[in-house]
Length: 103
Length: 152
Image (cartoon, rainbow over all chains, first blue to last red; front, side):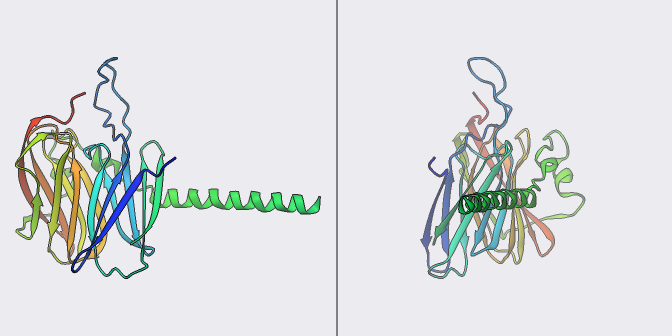
């Protein structure tokens, strides 16, 4: 299957901007199915881990309020050519995916 | 015959190693604070989430978001801070059923800039709480929502 994470990096004057999109339904567990009227079970990403050359940049803990197909962008300092960025996520149902990109 | 079983053994060992490392990384990461994310908006959620620590308003935190969001399901929100040694950034939406939307725990940085998209159930105050040098700072912004983010 195609990777669910898409990453784009852009070198700015001082920092590198990283933008990413994850394909995920992000169901809150509070929404009702319009046909059956039953609650759609919660299915959302709980954790996103981002590493820059094996050093943690951040761990994001997400709740149900993050939109479907989440978008995330952040800036990185001290990026050298050849650096790698590793991003992975986990959801509440045990699903996960990861990607490693060259900056 | 010997070489075949040896290969099988190596394959098996490799698969086992892979499974073991996956399991390890899984347990190492399994620390999602479910308690914080299940705090209800009807409670004094700031206190439930951050405890009794004082939270100071800070002009060094900037929330960028539209003042009127047409679609509450996708509201772009960005939080910029120039506070020193930022350890974590939390984003809360006060009128959502579960106010805590996202919490970023990061290696201490002097500049943090995070942008994401959130669901807003209705017009809300978006609150950013930044932990810097062990202290909590906050900033708020009102967002008006014309269509809620929880419709089917």
